[in-house]
Amino acid sequence: MKVFITGGTGYLGTVLVEHLVTAGHDVAALARSDAGAARLHEAGATPVAGSLSDTAVLTGAAAAADAVIHAAVDYTMTDESTATELAAVKALVAGAASGTVPKPFVFTSTGLVYGFEEDQDTSEDAVLPEVSAQPVKVAAERIVRGEAGISGIVIRSGLVFGRGGSALVTGLIQSAQHTGTSIYVGDGENAWTPIHIDDLADLYVAALEHPVSGVYNAVGAVPFAFRALAEAIGDLTGKPVASVPLEVAEQNFGPAARTLTTTSRLDASKARDTFGWSPAPRSLTDDVRSGSYAEAAAR
Image 1 (cartoon, rainbow, N blue to C red):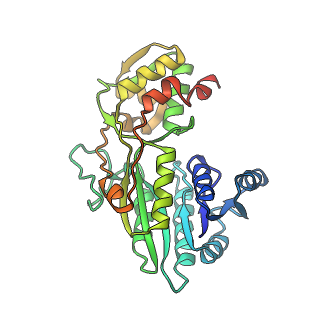
Image 2: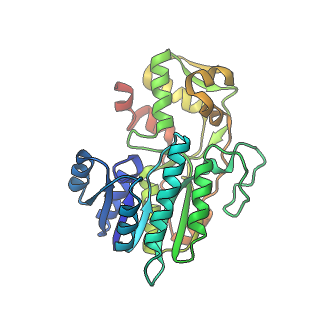
C-alpha cells in the first residue's frame, strides 16, 4: 500500500514510518528540510518536499497515495497555526477523496478534546464540549468525518510515551531538573491511562490495513497517578517530590498546567474490538525510572 504521512519526522511520525516500512508498505512523507528528508531516506521512506502550508503539495501527495495519515501535531494553538492545520486537513482530504474508491484517512486527534469536566462523557460518540485544550482538533475532526469520499478514521489518543519522548513527560523531567523539585498538583491522585508509542503505531497500521470509519479512543493497559509519576521523576533525577497548588504549577507550565489536575477515563475497547488490537502492558512510571527516559534526564 502507498501511504502518505505528514509529521513523519516528528515523535509519533518517526515511529509510524518505521512500523509502516516494517509492515511492507511504500511510505512517502512530508519533509520541511534537507535534514528531515535525509532522516526519511534512512528510514526507508520517500521524502515529499513541503510543509503544511503547501496545500497543493498535500493534495497531490494524498491523491497519489492509497492511504493517508495526518500525524503532524502543533500544540501552539495560535491563530496562524490553527488556520494552517485546518487548511492542511482540507487539502489532504480533498486529495484523498479524489479517487473512485474511498481511501483510508487516519487523523491524529487527542483525548484532550473531551475537555476538563469530571462528568464529561468520554465515549467516542460523545458530544464534545465547547471548551477543551485542543479546539483545533475538534474542528479538524469534523472535516475528516464529514467527507464521504474517504474512510475517515479519527484516533483520540491518551498521553503518548516511550522512546524517551512526549512533551509532557520530558517537560516535567526538565522542570524538576531546573527547579530542583519534581512536582504534582494537589493530592496527585488524579490518574491517566497513557499509551506506548509503539502500541499506538501498531493501531495505526491495523486501521490502515483493515479500515473501518469512525472515532477511536487509544490508551494502553497500565494507568498512572500524577503523584506516582512525580515520584518516578524524582527517582530518575534525584530531586525531592512535592505537592504544589495549581497557581504554582501554572508559573512553570502556563495554562497547560490545568491538564495536570484532570482525570482521564478513556476506554479503548472499540479500537481493540474493531481492529483486533491489543496494547502491551507497559508502565509509564517504570519507563521513567529505568527505561527510555534516562537520556532525557541527562540532557
